[in-house]
Length: 231
Image (cartoon, rainbow, N blue to C red; front, side, top):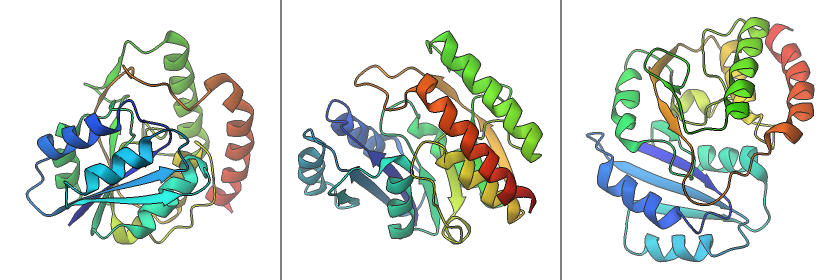
């Protein structure tokens, strides 16, 4: 079984379309569980998901009473997943479900598959220039400091062998959780593969990541993760 883990916070504008899109377009050749962690949403996200779960039997919803941020939602979803393979997916409809079958197939030979903006064929479309620059610089610096073979370490679209991803302790509450996960998997000598992915800017709703204000926390977290990586 494959479990798709989706953290969702105040996504009432897109969540119904996302679930319907996943149900229609995912074709992975085996049983599929869609697990959405409603991370303390204050809009109608939770109500919409509960209603959808009555129609889609493979849709499971976990509700956080209080927002725990991206890291907390991923931790809950990953450890509650039933599948032997886990795919993490953003709720904003910027991650194409059609790519999932290819990502899952690569897990026959690898431990992790990354949907990458920074390999040949990948990229970013209609994304603000400052976000493109920040993402490229951050990934270049991370790869150098951590000797990471992965070109896109910060993407949220990844597929994992469940046993491996469940074996690490996710402590980071915020958006730097993606760097924490990669760092701890590097320590475990995980085998990584990347497939090209074109990120398009979201059309509905708003991003929860405030790029410029997040930089100081990212820098602090990278310093802490260096100890995890090399000590």
